[in-house]
Image 1 (spheres, rainbow, N blue to C red):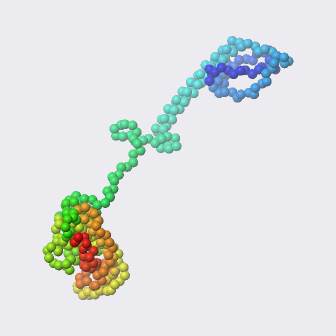
Image 2: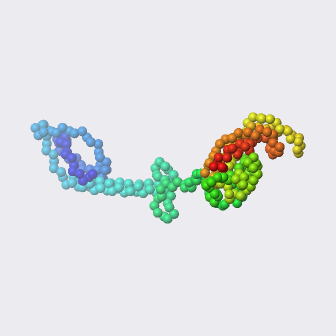
Image 3: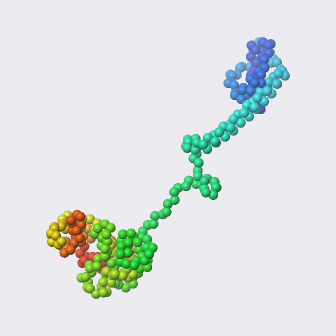
Length: 303
């Protein structure tokens, strides 16, 4: 800024030209701030021609003026050096302030965590989550009893070691009922209308899980209006209400968990049962009749 050539000086003021007394030179200390901070620009004065009255040639610069200019240049360089140093110091203070006040989101960026190996800053690390497994999953152990097959209905589990529904019919199935949440049991008698031979039993209600190809899950899903009241004498006389009920039937391939059938079925057995388990609500829920259950499973078993 101080090394640039000075702009053309305006023509001397006639009044000052008439005054022979020279103006004292400014001291170096006074010139320094004038170099660092530019003085307001004065409006240009119209030049005075030699023919104008009162014109006088400007006096040549004296040695003291040269000294003042050199002092101003040196002073300006010192000021610039001080400004640069102050800027550097200010930058250092800002860096230190940023380290100590990382929580100030308006002035400093948050400090990123570093990796355990001491490398550079890591990318914005989000909590890693294991992907959720969709669909049925293979059991970690083989089915050793019929009750193990409850997991096919309730836990979306399959058993890869069991035979697939393939080859010639019949395709063995077991019917697992749930008329109370959390309770499931095997229906051992619904197939009686088909005969009591060992072959029929092994096809419709096998006791060996290793021969089962399909698992049928029958769940009570809703109850409705009253059908009738049922009276019982043992162990003591009491009257229970038989209500309409809806059930959901699902059939899975035991070896793969593949769903083969799903349908809603009404509780069409609306007779008072001979034996019943009494719950706290004192109600009897109409069940899917044996014939309706066989009809729903027949095509999957015999074809």
